Structures are given as C-alpha cells and as structure tokens.
Image (cartoon, rainbow, N blue to C red; front, side, top):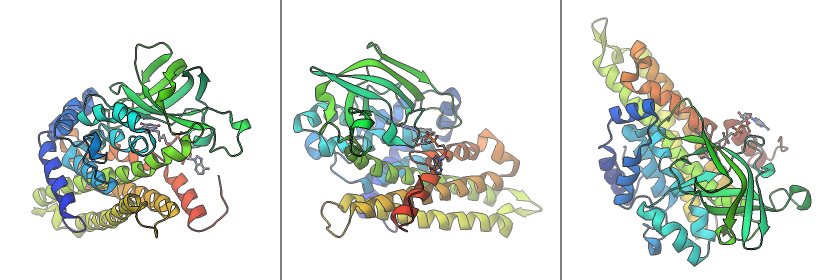
Length: 399
Ligand SMILES: Cc1cc2nc3c(=O)[nH]c(=O)nc-3n(C[C@H](O)[C@H](O)[C@H](O)COP(=O)(O)OP(=O)(O)OC[C@H]3O[C@@H](n4cnc5c(N)ncnc54)[C@H](O)[C@@H]3O)c2cc1C
C-alpha cells in the first residue's frame, strides 16, 4: 500500500492486518469461492488479535478508533487477495454495530457488543427486502408490539453471512406508513438473536456470481418473537439511527473496492512484466501500460475521496464545520468513485492477461466477478447519482 495520505496509526494497522491476511493465500480464496465454504479462519484470526472491535469503544474491549482506520483495515483485507469475500466476512461487524455503539443504552452495549468484539459471535445486517428494493422507507417487514415482545413478520433478501451470524441488526416498521407524518418515521432498529431453531425464522441461501464463500440469504420472519430490550433507541426513530451505520458502510465498501482494484492491478502488472510475446514483455507495449496506468490514477483519486469521506464521518461530532449533509454526500460519492475505479482496474487486469485472464488460476476473473458488489450494494450507482443530483446540485428529486 502506498504510504502517502495515511497516518502512522493507519499504516501500523495496515501492516498488522496484512500479516494476518498473508496466512490466507490466493489458493485459499479460490478454493473457498469454488466450494462456497465460509472463511471462518479469517474472522477467528482477526478477532483473536482484537481487530473486530477496531471502531468500537475501548470500554467494551474495542480499539476506539474511527471509520477511517476501519476502512484501512477493510482495504487491506481486500487488497491481500481476500477480495470482497474476505471483506464481507468481517464488515457488517464493523458498520452495523456503529448505531448500536452510538444509540444503545450502556447495558445494551455491554450485552450486544462485548462478545462480538471478542469474536464469540457475529452479526448480519437486515435491511433489503424483495418487494421494495432501494425504496427502503417502504419496507414491509413489521414488528408488532405485544407486552414485553415484538413479533416480526416479513421478508429480507440478500442478507450476507446470515447462515453464520447469530445476531442481526434489523430494520422493521413499527407504525404503518399510512399512520406516520413522513415515511422515514415509524421504522425501528433491533439487535436480534438469530436463533435458527426458533419458531418463525427461515433462511434460504441464494446462489450468486461472486464472493461465493460468504453466504447471501433470503430470510423469512413469521411472528418471530424478539424481546423489547432488543430495540435500539426510540421506537419509530430507526431510520435516523441506522443511517449512522449506512454512511460507515459506504466508506468501508469504498475501501474494499479500492483494495480489490489495487490487487487486480498488482496481478496485471506482474503478468505484464513477465509475459513475453513478440520477443518482449507485453508490459512494454503502451497498449497494455496505458489502460493500467489510467486505472491506477482513478484508484488513487478514489482513495482520496474515500479517506476524505471517512475523516468527515469520524469528525462530524467534534468539528462544527462538518454537516451531516456533507458527510452523506462524501460517503456516497466515495463509494461510487471507488466502485467504478475498481471495476475499471479489474476489467483491464483481465484483458491484460489475455486468455489467462479468463482462467481461475490467475485470480483476476474472480476479482472481476466480485467488483460488481460495490457497484450494486449497499446502494446502486443510479441511486447515488439521484442523491448527488438532488443534494449537491439542488435538482428536483427524481425518485
Ligand atoms: C452480494 C450482495 C450482498 C448484499 N448484502 C446485503 C446485506 O448484508 N444486507 C442487506 O440488507 N442488503 C444486502 N444486499 C442488498 C443490496 O443492498 C441491494 O441489492 C441494493 O441496495 C439494490 O437493491 P435492489 O437489489 O432491490 O435493487 P432495485 O431497487 O430493485 O433496483 C434495481 C435497479 O433499478 C435501479 N433503480 C431503481 N429505482 C431507480 C430510480 N428511481 N432511478 C434510477 N435507477 C433506479 C437501481 O439503481 C438498480 O440498478 C446485498 C446485495 C448483494 C448483491
């Protein structure tokens, strides 16, 4: 990793996490991608050395660092060759817990986060629904209060790691949309036990294009009981609370995309130096050099946008010149730019390998499949454009 633009702490994080990731070879990731087996060992190794709680409070056993440092960690994981699969096996534990750290009571924080930081269990993030998609405010999963419990009914989709996670950060509607002043009201956030044997819960794994080592799932709730103490913050304020995790998620995904892009360029330039055709390395041809050089510059620019966004996120509460509006714009823009730069780098890396780019042996085809994830999730390219057009350019809302 280029050392410019990073603090000494961030470089130390990069070096330490990189050492752990070095135990997991390209072969490990290729095999896990093929078999669909979960990379449990990476989570265990990172948890053992205290990395899961990188951005969680020290009082709970975390490192008390920011999303900037967590983004360095996720970029490092992805860039090591673990790619999106490696990053996805960790990231929800970092971003989905941010709203818990900020909005839960002291008692809830202890119960919910201390064990997660130690690696005893992990969390998945349950927002997306099949019938409402990016129109999050219309989500249909309901939580109905009865006595000391809520009963959850509805369906989530694309929930990563739900097979291995025993907790879920879940967004559900507690007041029907017809009864609230604004659609952003009436949603509540829960930190629930995802007990696969409990009545009213069913999971179905989705077959997918890339990062196959990490499961993606449809999750069905049918009067699934969760105690009232699992609600985070005030009832009906869940959307405002979860946004705190969503901006963090955009920064982490941006870092992961960057890591994948740099990894692809690393493979491509190595191959271009070594592969000799027409009596010289293919990398001596500008037709090979220039696409890779321009992909590198796009990654570098996206890197600045990413760490700028993470820094705004981290400094929002201390620095009065930073607005939530600026944080939202920066985090969305960074995710967009990093995902596009990663796509360019991965596509060009495949092409620079010629036929071997299409072979599993050189790993870049896996990166290309994986780099679609940050382009689609957690928010699509089009929705980011809609948001930026409205919020930065003051154009009429189009959606
Ligand atoms: C590998 C993977 C892992 C994921 N993990 C999780 C997870 O752990 N937890 C979770 O909650 N979700 C997860 N997701 C879901 C992800 O966040 C959603 O897929 C994403 O937000 C897009 O939503 P959608 O698929 O419903 O797209 P849709 O809302 O159906 O949109 C489809 C297309 O239409 C476009 N579109 C829709 N409306 C407009 C408009 N007004 N203007 C312009 N274009 C528009 C979109 O940009 C998109 O291209 C994951 C997805 C993937 C692929």
